[in-house]
Image (cartoon, rainbow, N blue to C red; front, side):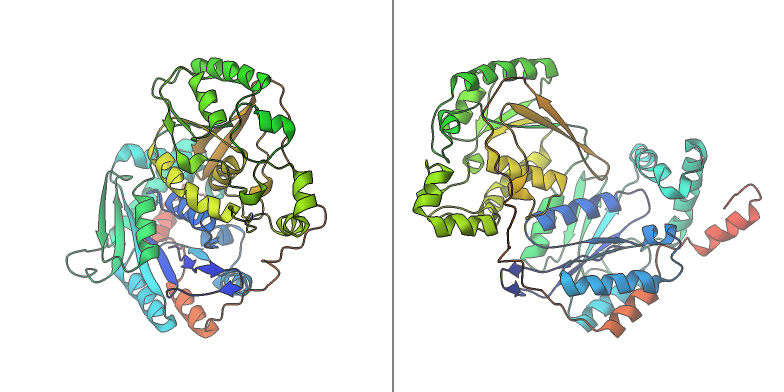
Length: 457
């Protein structure tokens, strides 16, 4: 099962707008629970709710004999970060009732996510792509590993009790994700956080696709080292549009959608492709406010304190009358949701916006986000894989000015020097999680193994 402890944070420390929400994953093996858990955790981190996954299976594989080691690690994590995910297996009402009791005793809201899938092709794909490559099967061939894991699933199925929306579980909050998003059943959503989780889960899919990210061609303001503005393309920028058009044609994607910002340099880049494109205001470059169209040197001279503050914490710093990266994340969230719904998309945007999008797909922290390298005249091809995203950087061999500014050597983050403490009853936590056990195999599964002389531990 998975526990996700979620908080809403402000700069000075944790401020709880609602009681913490515990998200519990439910479902048989090879139903995409880990995929959903990690993807959801990545999203929560990106929108500013620190969350971490603790996978009990990994502790077991590292020969940790007692759950107390895992639990102590989780408790220690609570001291420095408000979010944790505890990953083990959950298949019975008895265990779910224990979780509900644990939540009631600690003032947590409980939200279940059940992944239900009976499509044999999807299950086989999940087993081949993820399970047979796990450490449990490192010495097995794929055929033997597949058969072994199918037996494990059948043993879990004997005890599995799905969520019952009509009787036993009708008063609980949950969402059933059926056949990888073909249908959903949502029951008794309690608050804003749960509604955001439901909305997110209803937008993601697992179909093969690629997302192409690039910046507009080099602009006149880029050549002059000026922030923002709405200048047109330079000569090299126009040359890049020709190279980009050739690149798009070579991809041979008839269903490719093209999105741009509403800024002139982005639109000019898209127009050269001779394909339909959609303009998004949300993709406009970060608003530098009073610093728009200035060079960094001019900002340093006119606003020395602002310049220093931005170097201290680039993510949270907001330009006077402008935006911060934190503001930008909120602005581009609808773009992320729509990208999750789509198949092949080319997004022509701007440096700060591209950093926000990359940080989401690559699971980069808020501290890393403002310093991700997004060079001009380079296309990044993102291909979602099992638990992450594969990145291919493709230079179109057109020279351009370097607009990247490295992180200052000496930087004190004024917003992260505070330590955040979260207090929980250790005895209650230990009792609950120890009672839950972990990712043990069903008893009759081990008995079957003992009766099978060909089984090698």
